[in-house]
Image (cartoon, rainbow, N blue to C red; front, side, top):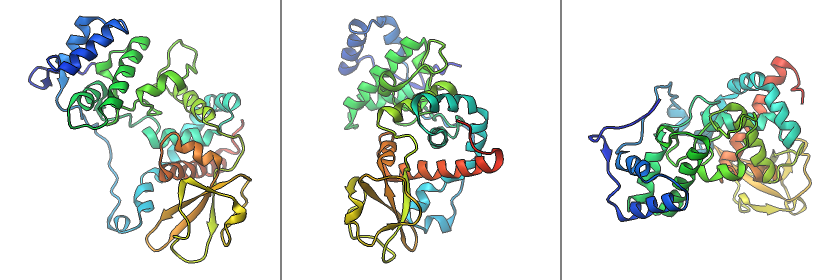
Length: 323
């Protein structure tokens, strides 16, 4: 389904000097037709936000009076049951990805669950229009970054024979089940179903691409991601926390894992701020790898905790996932 817009709803960018230069580059460096580029940039939807009708979740007053971790993780950690269904439905593809890239299926599933709620939420923005606004409106300080994404989007659409005006995604231009930004495609998207195309709206390609992405960033098969630890007190301010700070465990006096932790390298201290106290966790190498997908300790911890909830629920319902 195409999302062409009328002149009354659109903005004509073709008179802008920067856009003329951009179209010239796309024409002579990448082989795009002048008329096609002109048609795209002459009809850029003024409002690129087109929300889909969906059920919304209300956190409630108690949640919003709680700590930042409770607020951040509220929607994500509710998605375990959907993850169990997804793992069952795409068992063979997840098994294939595990054999090839050695990334555990519950983590691939959790990322798809958080990024697109297993494919049901792929973005409320028309990505071409959104990236044009971000690239050529003077107020955006990251215009250079977004122009790079716009180039990648157009080149991707040409390779895959897709009309770029039809692509939906996030407010930053991320697309598909895996929510890859366009510039990520060339290096990390894989044609996992062998149909000659790399399509992030295809579940099989999305599963393979996430597994490949994590593997390329150093994922270690069978190694624990994180474990909650004990410490003295209810709030932790003794040392810097977050995935960018690492410590030898022997130097962390008074901080001990609550459970077994199959990891022997340096660890990060991940602090989750709750209403009356801080949870403190060790994060290992695989935790850091997840932050390469989204550079946030809270994001990586949401992936980890959702993955573990999915794994436990899947095992109870279907038995161990056969890898």
